Image 1 (cartoon, one colour):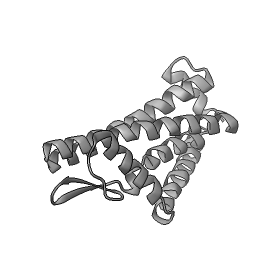
Image 2 (cartoon, rainbow, N blue to C red):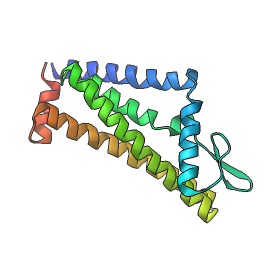
Image 3 (cartoon, rainbow, N blue to C red):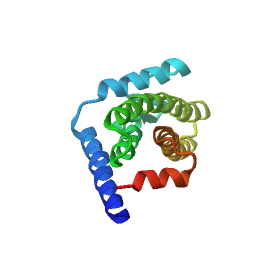
Image 4 (cartoon, helix red, strand yellow):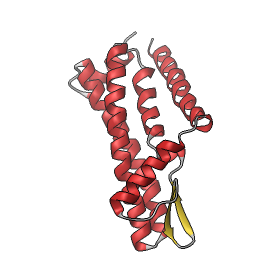
Length: 168
């Protein structure tokens, strides 16, 4: 039934998404954080200290584990693996391609946030950009998932996709 499909999806999504967020607490991804910080610093020609990018003499922007794009990729994974369709092999392919694209777009998000904070010296503006771009990133993930699922299920409309997603 429809309710059972939604409950199954909700359970799988939360298990995958929250599980990946817990992993961020326990797995050392400092090398990825430092790589992103160095990449942003190199592109903008600004100083970097490990995972920190000084925005002004007293404030650093930290490329935290949650700023790496892994959270957004986890969101995509939860959406992809939460439903029964498409087949597992396609889900894995969509996750790898989508996850890679998310990580690339996230790099541009970090560049924008640091650019605003460093070159304007306005930490409030950088924080506002940080929050706004996270919402934009979430919308990007949903759009990526929607387009990918329409392609995978050969649905022509959103309503048709919804029907295919909840079919038992």
